[in-house]
Length: 104
Image 1 (cartoon, rainbow, N blue to C red):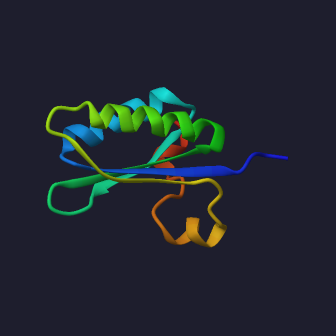
Image 2: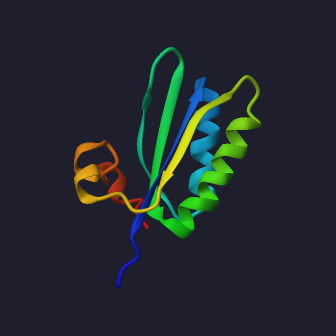
């Protein structure tokens, strides 16, 4: 039986913090970056997908990296261990064609 995939999202104030978070997340676990965008007023978010056992350490690494970035600030973060299919279909957390080659 395949493991369910989790989603992890980090929102930061400032681009350097979200860049540091994204870098640390993909290095901190076998996860795939599935979404990145501006939220509002200098806020950015990044979303990852992978098994719950890989998303958890990746999120911890991303949060630590964002918090240690000069001038960066974590606005919010959240992990969804097993999002239902209808959530995946509606929100921008589906694997894209661009991300597919990097998928674990």
